[in-house]
Image (cartoon, rainbow, N blue to C red; front, top):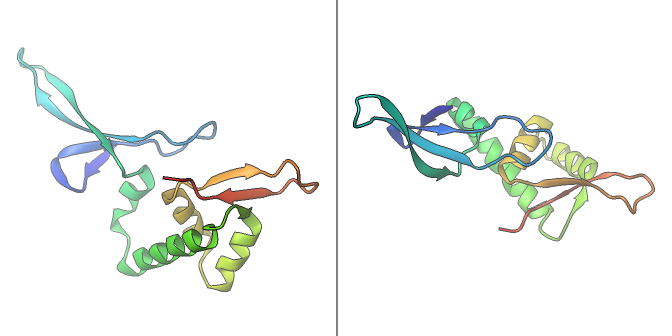
Length: 131
C-alpha cells in the first residue's frame, strides 16, 4: 500500500511479488466515514501504477532517464517478436543499460517470459504483450 501520487487522500494497493502468476492490477481506494461513524474502504477503481513504481517514486532524474531509455530499448528490440532473454541482456549491456534497470523496464512493459520448448537448449524468451 502506498500514497497515490496524484491525490493526497487516496492510496493504492499493489502486489509487489508474485511467483505463480502475473501481477494483478493495482487498486485505488480511500478511507471514509460510514453512516454509523465507523471507517470504511471506498474502492475507486484500478491504477496503472505497480508496487515498484510506487516505491521508486523518489528516483533521481538520472535514474528515471535510464529507465525510460531501457523501456524504449526493449520496445524497439522486441517490436518484431520474441527474443532470447540472454540476447536482450547482452544488447542492453552493450548500450550500458544495467541488468537491474533492464528488468525494471521489463516489469513496467509487462514483458512475458517463457521457455522455448521447441528449442533443444530450452532458452527463456522475452515477448512484448499486445495492448
